Image 1 (cartoon, helix red, strand yellow):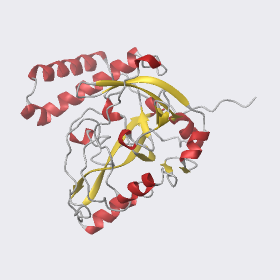
Image 2 (tube, rainbow, N blue to C red):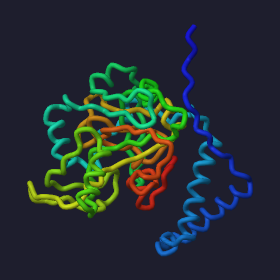
Image 3 (spheres, helix red, strand yellow):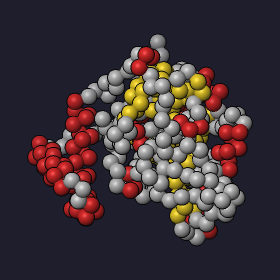
Image 4 (cartoon, rainbow, N blue to C red):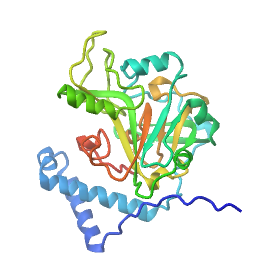
Length: 315
């Protein structure tokens, strides 16, 4: 009998009791301050927030096993309309060209710390084992919606690629341009080297909103065809291997029995059901396997995390 492949395991340090209590106290202190932005922006505030985030991750992993499932609902409870918030249509010309042909030419790039880099079409992904789950999406703004998602478990894609021993994080690079960073042509060219395949061109003039309920960090030009100055900053997210191999973590291509609409993240949307909505990256074009998060964005693990949001965001 062929032995089952052993997936890499992320070693999570178990903090000492004193460290845990200190982190919890820091979290309570920050909560008591409410909307004190000045404190939150200070080095002390940032350390307290980070301690609270670490405590959240530790408690979640302590109370839940890696296989603990988020609640799944009967079809009778599916929301009549799944709110297409955030970016509703990426303005990039390359994305628009793919969407116009029903994503016929789409290829999901899987690279980084893998033994066998992959370029997978939607047909390739649909041919892999699939999972359907009816779950609740909880937005950081306070609203929720229930949808029926079908897609390929992320674990299937990672097993196909084969992770190297030092792999620790899975980074999702997306098609939606969030803002334009000032920089030299050399810096822009360097950024484009790391773009998802087919997404190297500049965005077409169009309104762009931020992903998952957040106000846009910057707007794309509103006049059709207007040239954009600066380097496109596209949405990205990341999770660790524990969540990557969770049975409910899927790359969804269908919503409520139909092909995923553009407004909800076509061609692929990450579903990681035990975390808040901004972790559910839309318009996934590339998956990069890494040892750490430094050097990607500002090094905090996600577009909104680079702007102060919690990385783990567990619920």
